[in-house]
Length: 334
Image (cartoon, rainbow, N blue to C red; front, side, top):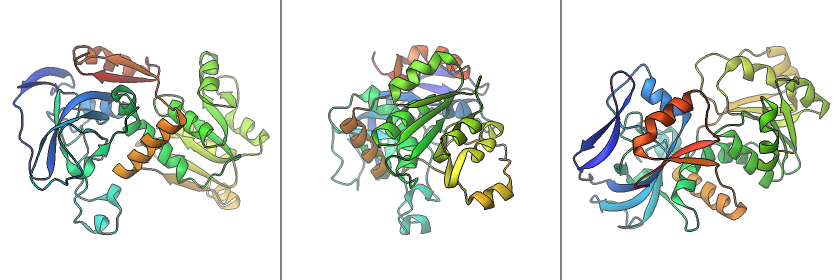
């Protein structure tokens, strides 16, 4: 038997004991060492389509059992990770084109497949990420979602060293985006709320901080000549929509926050400015490995607070109110 936190019908987490599973032919069994706590976990736990499921999609652990037909690349005792995209099928039309993130048969870890709020977890081999030596498991875990999402979006944005790049939302994703943007050579603007984070954002790599409590972000960006790229990590459409006016001509707005409300955009300004609005969906396991390698090379780490399985419910209550700086990570056997 092993311990796991399972979602109940009333949106709570219950500590239960589950039978140790046997991996299928394309799966491995992982002994979990660490699992990050993401804002998306709240949606999985409190969402409309609640199921009895173990949440968590920033998982680091070691392989303790291998199913048949798993590639020899993966070995017993190897340290691996799994992010939100839990493994592609290699058979659908998207996989045949190499677009693994859009696999039509892909599971979403912690949502429709048991995740990492547990001592053990099954994982599909195609979703595995090799973890480099030199990265602690508690540091690597948030990089499989918050790190991957921001690093990959910046990398494929088209912005070049020296360009003005603005990051909206300085939380679990944003605090990593600032570090990546700085190390990539961009002129980094942080857009947040409150004077209390001024020193934090400067330490994380921002050259300029725009406090929207006292400043108009659009006006300030226009004073700087407009941003080549605005990367927004927030899901509030009313906060995101106006920012397109802060772009330079042919500038790009990339969305990472997956909200339900529609954006309100002026088609005239969009056309005249030749602006681009784009969503960005995490990445492939290979992209995760590139994220981890760059993080190790550039000495980028998440700011974390460690919790245990027994204290996760308290951490979730704090996560609901934003009372975390900047990421909770569950450490097993802490």
